[in-house]
Amino acid sequence: MTISETLEAGKWLYFVIAGFYYSSQVAKRVAAELIRDEALSLIREPGNPHDPNAIRVYAKMVHPIGYVPRNIAKELAPLMDSQVNLICTFVGWPAEQGDPKLRVRAHPLQDLPPEHPWIDRFNKIIV
Image (cartoon, rainbow, N blue to C red; front, side):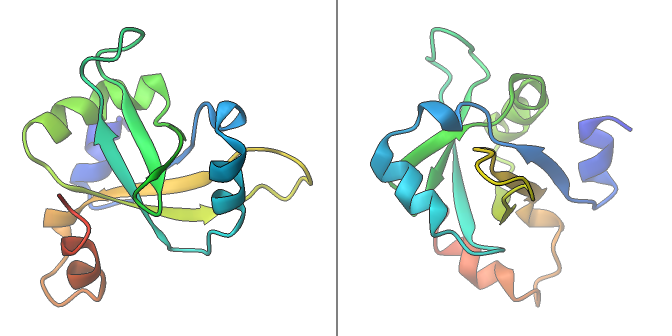
């Protein structure tokens, strides 16, 4: 199943944030305090010289903690560029101690029913 098919089927897309290892010490401390289902922000970086599909992941809306992996960003970037708002939440850390990988999930906000408890929460953080 492709990424687009996963999202169109109403399923969550799970992935590990890329580049977390290179985040600042402040961002790593903030990330260490994330709780399950805490909202993360996805911000497109079309001018990124390394990847025109780059999508940066932020904790607490101001701390860059990494990127959506390149293979996933390739499909998510056009959706975001066409004004599809994506929910992104923290899922957890791997069971292995010291593994600097954050697991997250994404889902189109439009596909949640209006009464879903996350609708108000995420509408407040979408810029």
